[in-house]
Image (cartoon, rainbow over all chains, first blue to last red; front, side, top):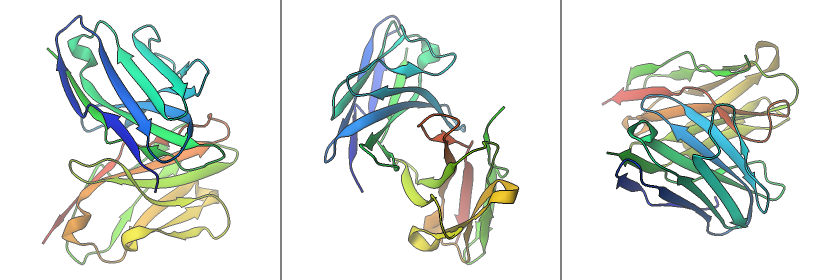
Length: 115
Length: 114
C-alpha cells in the first residue's frame, strides 16, 4: 500500500505554545487528507477534512482557530495546535487519499503531551 | 444519530479459538465498509474492505467479513486466531450521506493467549 509519514511521532510542549504536526504522502498525490484525534481506549474522532488548495472543513465542535490545517501541496498537510493546553494532549492521526481513490492510508500518529 | 457500533469492547481468546467481532452501522445510502487493525505501537493497517459485489470479503492474515445489508452489519471473522492477532480492531464506514471521511467505531481490543 501507499505510505503516509507523520512527524513528529511524539512531542511534549509547554502550555500556551503552538505545535505543528506534518503529514506527508510519500509515493502518491494526496488530494484529500483527514485529521483524526484518538483518546485513550476510544475511537478515532474525525477533526477535519482538507482538499489540496482549499480550506479545511471542520467537524462540529472542533475549533478551527485552535487547530489550524494547511494543505498547500499534494503531498503535505500540516496541523498546528495553537496555544496548546493540557486538555489538547492526545494522539493525532492523519490519513490521506489519492485522486479517485477509495482507500485512505494512515500515518503512524503523533502523541502530543502538553505540560 | 448516525454511527458505527462495535459491540465488543474487549475480547479474550485462547490460540486456535474462532473469532467474530460485531460491527453495525446506521448510515443509509451507499456505504463502503472497512476493518482496520492497529498492532501495539504501530499505525492503522487495512485488513479488508467491501465496496460492492460478493458480500463475503476475504482480507489479509486469514480474516474475512460478511456484509449483511438487511442487518446493517459487517462482522469480522477468523476461524483460528493466533497470539500475533493481539491488537485493536476498528470497523469503519464511508457513507455517501456522511461525507468522504472514514467514520470509525470505538474499536475492539483482542487479547489472544498462547
